[in-house]
Image (cartoon, rainbow, N blue to C red; front, top):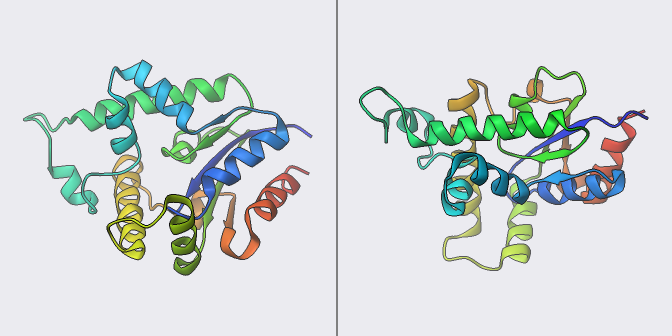
Length: 195
């Protein structure tokens, strides 16, 4: 079995990060999630807070508003610099060998690689609400509002930087419903796809 590079895109609260970590553990390969933040900080010189906040979501829930806001006279933004650093880091990590890359448009950045398996993890709203309340505790905002806002910002970021629709089936090799399958079954399905 040849182990490829895996990219895990996910709806907020679907457990995609956990799927990625467990998959990497099973295959004894690196998983880049929070580790990506460190590497992007090194590459870009940006603070952790900025990379965490702006590395996979727009400040605004509309990509059009994001495209027109916070730009200089030449149409350039600091988020564009972050995108360039992120693109560079993810490309370099993939060149080092098999790994799991969680989020940050890794599926798009590595779309030309034949050794990349692109995965999207999703779940229904009720499952995701239950999961974020258990994982992160009760927040000031209602959980459903928080989920919708986070997903809209991720979708806007993805559409702006890739020109594609986030979560659209044709962008991925596998789409898995973690609410129906559970985390461990998602990992099993991904492993079975390796043949």
